Amino acid sequence: MSKKPYISPSFSYVPLEETLQVTPRRKKLFIGIPKETIFQENRVPLTPDAVSVLVNDGNEVIVEHGAGDGSFYFDNDYSEAGAQIVYDKAALYKATTIIKSAPISEQEAALLQPNQVVISPIHMPMLKAETLEQLIAKKIIAIAFDSIKDDAGAYPIVRSMSEIAGNYAILTAARYLGNTDNGKGVLLGGISGVPPARVLIIGAGVVGEFAARAAFGLGASVKIFDNSIYRLMRLQNNIGRRCFTSVIEPVTLAEELRNADVAIGALKPVNGITPVVVTEQMVSNMRAGSVIIDVSMDRGGCFETSRLTSHEKPIFKKYDVIHYCVPNIASGVSRTASRAISNVLMPIMQQSADMGGVEGIILSKSGIRRGVYMYKGCITNAPIARKFGFKYTDLDLLLSSQS
Image (cartoon, rainbow, N blue to C red; front, top):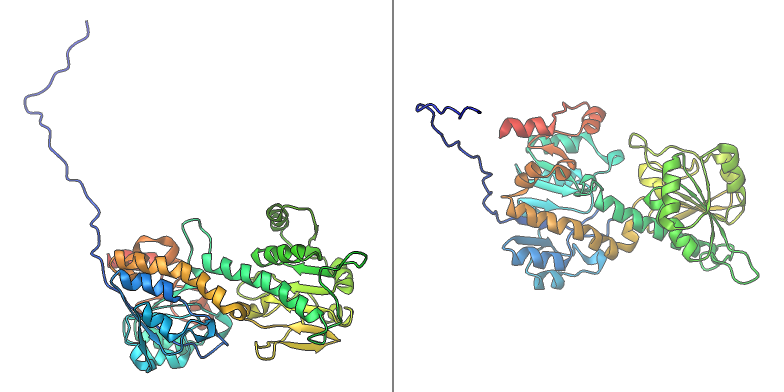
């Protein structure tokens, strides 16, 4: 027979304490949206519809006069959504959270108040040490919205802007192939009995994929180059058809460029700079009237002949080849781009209010932390710290030491 378990009379059950997460108290946000005056920026980070949602949730939003004009969102649209319109830029920078669609400039950094939150893109080639020094001195929390990750591990704003850039590049190429803008008079898609234009795409990322979709949709002949076999296979699977793909091998690339009507540069940057894979010699051998669209221009460009152009003067000719090298392509369709950015930032602002402020969402969401490059005066982005010689502080360690 098995023995019965012996229970000592001294044995007792002691309940243990359970640690419960304390729900943060909701915090009203005070958001300011300034009018952009640099980088030919026409986008606005929050649309009137998004502002209406935030105001109805109890937040306060102020908008600088004319901030949405470039996207055809006017002061009346914002005031009807519940925002206050201000005419003094200094008054706007009294808001505790500043949301911008262009990077912070030196002049704007001077207007910032201590301990503010700034949410904006960041352009590494145009970033200045003097601007960072002002942000450090004022203990700013700075978030680069193009580095924010979503719950799926993707960069939602970068992807949206890349989709726009890919589509817009093909539409722009079709325009400059026509006679209206002194092109050689070629219809991109061709017609019965007349072959279509030949489009060569360098880069098989999101920009390359949507450029290929648009080109195929218009009936063009498409060839795609990239040094990643995985990206080439993924692109073919995503567009659902077989097409010419190749690794970037100089002899093959030069031969295909010689016969191309359109060349799209859509390479991803390496260490912040796009590698130059098309030499001046290759461009000189291209057909007269061909069109180059260098989408990679904001990171230096992948054509050796590329040089910065603007939306006012978007093209120049070299070796009789039309070059379109506008860095901020998405501003060419600013209303669509503004809605795409707003769709990402508005829910983040809602969650920030629910979590007790922007600091609360930084603490609880790793995807938001990916975008933080400065936290209360500490540089938390290693490449930025390395480039300008500032001290780097790991954000996770910084947050754990403060909790």
